Length: 155
Image (cartoon, rainbow, N blue to C red; front, side, top):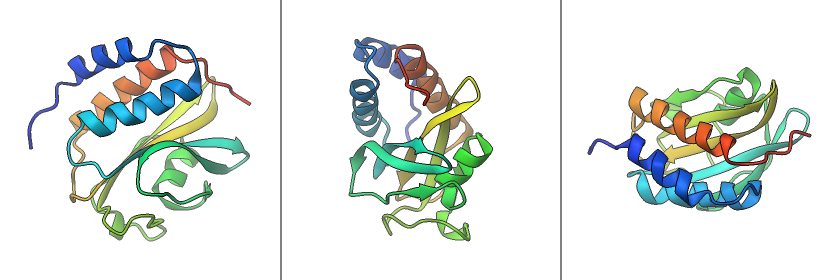
């Protein structure tokens, strides 16, 4: 798999996010990641719009599961623990929510503002063990840029 230059992607994302609007920026970010990061079959946001539940937000890919309780799946674990989840084989996760049977690995990054979970960014791949520690750090850096350049509602 080719090495991804996340520093360059971050500079490109900074230029792309030319508004403070959360909806526009989250839609742009999903399209950007889906286009620039190889071997993904789904990229999207799940937002906390009610307590302990994630609702579908902007995404790229097949139709998705909605809603996702904090108690279920990899997205729920990221929301509940407010920690990034990197899973090499989603089929080995007992409470995995299979929105797309083709997905094999997953990277889910929580977006937390002053202790409040705004949502998560979910990346799925049809390849097992697709996401490395470098991918995790690179995508987390993209999320930091997204947060800096976006007015995110907290409640």
